[in-house]
Amino acid sequence: MAYSAHGFGEMPQSYAAAFILNQQRIRGIDYTPVRNMHLFREKEVRNAGWHENIRYFNESIQDFTNDHTAYTELSGFNPQTLEELFQFSCARWNIEIPETERRLL
Image 1 (cartoon, rainbow, N blue to C red):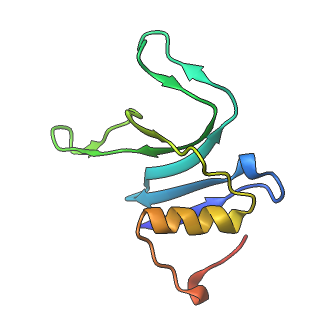
Image 2: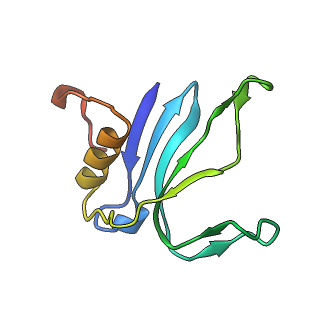
């Protein structure tokens, strides 16, 4: 099990957070710069901005699903620092990381 929050210094749109289990990303928070609409899924429109993806374990194939049907827009969320993304995602996913375990790369 691992947690990662990363990005390029002063570019908040480059920030991302991931919760990893068995070397697979099962939760993620990212920024999408442009609105997306999937042509073959008319009802699926994803607006530009911050969002969260969740992958669920599929019992029938004994693996995590690879679709992003669990997509949640995070309207109102606009981190300006990597620390803000770190605190938000940890709180959202109930992750507690002691100060001594934190590493900024």
